[in-house]
Length: 435
Image 1 (tube, rainbow, N blue to C red):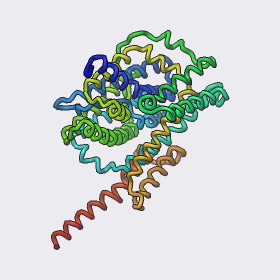
Image 2 (image 1 turned 90 degrees about the vertical axis):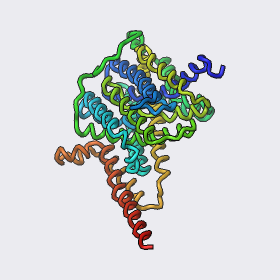
Image 3 (image 1 turned 60 degrees about the horizontal axis):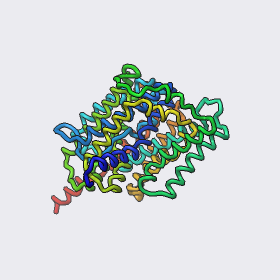
Image 4 (image 1 turned 60 degrees about the vertical axis):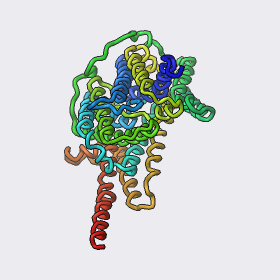
């Protein structure tokens, strides 16, 4: 029974369930914010699920060019949600996919060298960026809790009851359960909230009946990509931050599996992510990164074989080919989604703070990096017209709060930490020579 097909299949399905809520909520948020139709939203959810499977298989399948060969699951990255909404709102949905394509190609090109660039993205930089992203997502969640911006019943008691009921249900699951139930609490919360909405007459399942049982994916479903410099820069920064997060997951998995990773392994892993991002751009899906929740599930189950992850990848591909399953997620009311978003986006902020906990807070320089980058990111987000009179070439860097905050963190880290460490190294060498 140890390696029976039934056990491998059941463990594969468990991995799918652990990442499913995170995988489907991204297209629901982005598609809802961009005002996509029910049919378009169904396609977006379905293609995302399918591409999660493809991306996972690419990463597990180690070869000469790509794939780290560890039991890692890939899904769409939450750090890209707010930037994609901002890009789509300013330049249109085709600019989202143009920027994703270029950022994927960038990751493939720098994959061999990124191990040497990690020092430019210490926790003080990545923690600040992730914190900014999480905070800028909260207004999206609050609007959904009220029923969705522009809805006829915006802020109604029924919407608030659904939103807070969903949130409280998720909290109760976290309080009463551990392990697998806790890992899928968001998904269970969405199911419970939608069931309650159905009883209240606020869920419409007609989209499920209208959706087909099978479809073929098609490239550039939303149109040919367009390329905007500001959008491209934004997505490249997001890709770099995701690679830093993935590096931590790679080393954690290497430790769990008893495999020591070298530069070649890391480069293969980075290139697999870059390839997944490019495919996401081609088929109008999303940027992909490693999912840490599946690492926890790996530790919980104790099963480290790649066959389980291959199986999970295949299940995701099959699910993505069935639009009816994708349509099931589109019937989730905005208020229910908003309640779950508070928990999920709050976790993004908490994760950013956790990353910042690794920072040496006795250093005034680090405190200033965090203060200026988070302040700049939130300031530009709250007052978007601040740099309206600046030249277009400057506004590329200032129109988006995440870009402004990220570049501030990177620049100040270079000024205070990288140059300082170089100076200290040079001084110590001179002292050694003198001795």
